[in-house]
Every structure is written in C-alpha cells, then in structure tokens.
Length: 568
Image (cartoon, rainbow, N blue to C red; front, side):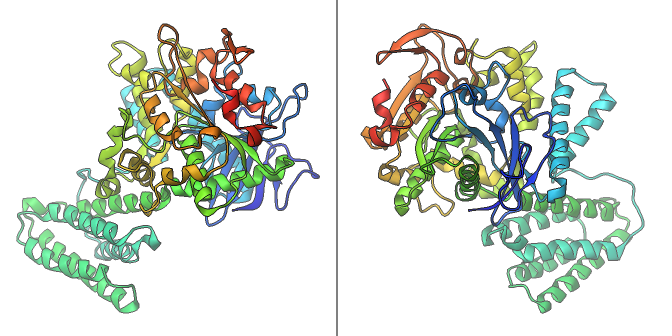
C-alpha cells in the first residue's frame, strides 16, 4: 500500500491529494506530459510515474492505462520518439496513460528529501544524457577515457572487490585499522540489519577472511592469524550484545598486532601489508554497501511498487469502477501474471479490468530462451560476489562493437530487435538510455522461471503459475516470432493456464514477411506503418499497437465478455 504522497509536475491546488507537492520542472529525459512521484510503505524509494494525458479530441475511456517495463529498463522504451511512442499512441486514443518506473529504474530515487526530488531527478537525467553523449562521440583520448570510466563506475557504484591493491607504504596507523576491522566485523555480526541470511553471512565472513589470508600466505604469522580467524567466525554467529562487541574489538586488536609483527619483519611477502589490508577491508565494505542498497527482488515489485502505483493512479484518474487496464512488457507482464495468481490464491480483487502481456511468461523451462545464460547466477555465493549487474553500463560499452565495423557483437542486436524492424537511431536510443543496474537478488528470483514449476516467490514455496487459473481477469498475450528472450513457446506455456474463455494468444510475425524480436512489440517499425488487413470483420493496422488499441477500445465489455471474442 502506498502512503498517499506524491510530487507532480502538473498539479493544481484543487487536484492535489494529501501531502502532495508540485514539481515545477521535469528533467529533459522525461518526455511525458507530467512527472509524478509516489512513496511506498516500508521503503525510502520514491517511484517515478510518467503520465500522458488523454487527447481531448479522442473518445473518453473508462479506465486509465498502466504500462510496466521489463527487468532493468525504464520508461523510455515506451516513448522512444514522437513518431514511435507507444505511450503517446495510447493517450492519443483517449487513455490516461501512466508508465511506472519501479525502484532502481530510470528517474525513481532512493532516500531523497521532498525538497530535493526535483534536483535529484535532474541529476539522474544529466547522468543518463552524458552516458549517451560519451558513446555517440566515439573513442576518447586514453587519459579522458580513463577519467570518464572511473567517474561512471563510481556513479554506477560498481565495486571491484578482488583487485590487487598497490601503493606506497605509509606509517602504521594501528587505531585506524582496528576501527575498520571492528566496524566490518560488527556489520557482519548484525547481519547487515537483516539484509543477509545466516548462510549468506557465513559466505561473506569466509570471503573476507579468505581475502586477508591471501595477503598472509607463506608467512610465519599465517598460523596465528588462522587461530584468530576461527574465534572471530564463532563470534559472528553469536547474537549481538555488549560482551560480544567487546570480544570482537579485542580480537580485531589481536589481529592487528599479529599483522604489525609481520610488518616489522620486513619480509618481502609482507611489505606494504597495512596499505593492502586497509584496501581489502574498504573494498569489502563497498560490497556490503551494495548489498544493502540493492536489496530488493521480484516480490518487492509485486507486493509494494505496483500496488502503490495503482493506488495512486486510481486516486488521480478516478475510474468509475476503480479498475485499471495494464500492459506489461517482459518482466512487466510477468508481474501482471503473478498479481493475478497471488490475488486469485487469496480470493482478492486485483483491481484490473484486463491485462495485456507482451513477451512474458511464468515458465521458460520448455523454451530455448537466451536468458538461460542467467542460470549460473542462481548460486547465492556468486550473487554475493557480484551483488549488482550494471546492465545499462555493459550495453553502452558493447554498443559500438555491435553497431560499427567489424560488428563483433552484432548478435546482441538480434536479442533486441529483428532485422529492419527498428530505426537505427531508435535502436541506439533504446540501448543507451533504456537499461539500468539490476540487483543480483532480483535475478536470483527470476531464474526460478527456468526451473521445474516456473517462477516462485522469494520463499520458494509458492509457484505463481499454480494459481493463475483462479483469476477472472481477461488476458491478451502477445509474442514475437523471432523473440530469442521470450520465445512464443514460452509465452504459450503460461497462456494455456488461463481459463480459455478469458484469454487470447497471438504471435506477431509472418513466414515471408516482417518479424518481431523482444522489443519490436513495443517500438518496431510496423507499430506505425500501415499494412491493412481484415481482422474479424474490422479493418485495422497490422501492428502490435493497433491490435492492442482495438482490444482496449472494448474495455467496457472486457470484464463481461472476455478478450477472446476480439482476438483471432
């Protein structure tokens, strides 16, 4: 549930809801009519909502429309340009259209004071635009490239935790080292305020000691260090209290004394040991900070972010029956399926008039999805080593290699768009602007979709597809014939679980015609090009957008008659 609290770029005094403030200037990256922020309970996140107000020339619609994006993506995919904007297209047809940016995506922000929301939004926008400019301008001089790369890594908060520290020896600062060690051990002992499970705590503790051990290998103090290590690991498993705190500090002091003794030996192996040890601890602390900051999974989106956005949209749009239409691409569609399943299990009304899923499935086991490459991340220890995946930074770095000779990474383009389906400039904008950093915790949960039974909740006990048949919400499920990420067979694996009278399934793409990859359902060329065909007695544009519009225009009847009556 959301606290009814928001910040909008276009509020009048009468329209404001409780505790709302106006955000006078939206950042340049936001091409919507309005930018709203909603705060979620049990979280410091402020979620960005891009709003596209309905055209006054269009017929009025009964329900507002919520658009949900895929994993690690922001709102830009739905609004690539004035001529290729799914959001603009739908608001032009009369729908009050909203795009949600979940936590960690796009202009959503963490922990900003209400007075700083506008400033933070502009800072995020400037960073995104600068990243595009760096790639567009081509290779930089080596010195500038190094500086820009370092700045980008700092802003993206990518920790390099296993680097070999080098540096000039400094005077031994015993108190500083004792303090750093004690603080690190204390954070582990407190289980990072609940962010780590018992098993994860053990993994992280062992990781730190292994890193320190490598600094002391083959030295005469290694055996004594191992003894202290054993005692500290035992204490870290003990519930936190003042006595344990004192013992941890005493053992930290003893550890520093042992290392100091080795430093005095002036043996080659231990030269500059203090500098290297401090660097090791600082890098480890950065990794702990990343784990804390990027501490969310799929269920956080499902249970907190999406309901908060829906409640806010209902308060602003005021649909007569309190329901929304929702369209979800990729993970956005998975969220909608999971919501129908969860609410069906609990016997609750999800507040949705109908949903449309674009390239989405709860179960990928029967398909040849390229996302199976994520399965190795299902190892929790590996996720702790790499707490975040900077997808946006990685794709930006890879883009020149996929779009310029010798095209060594051109295969990446096929994952995004089929040949000739997206204008090159729009494809570049999508790659450089649409992707964000993804928590490994989120990927860990999503990889359960590749195991028997399909996607599970964070406890592993609830299989979301098991209760999809209990929903009474109409579903339109669309797939792309050349989608390598969510192939048609994966989409159908979920479609067949929805009650037959409530579901329509369609695959876009023709054997001797145009084809649709993962993002073409949202931004492909044929979304705006006219190819007239007959469809159940109605002439319409052969595009995903127009197909969706035709179905959505029947939203008066959808809950009574079912989407299937308007499908092929």
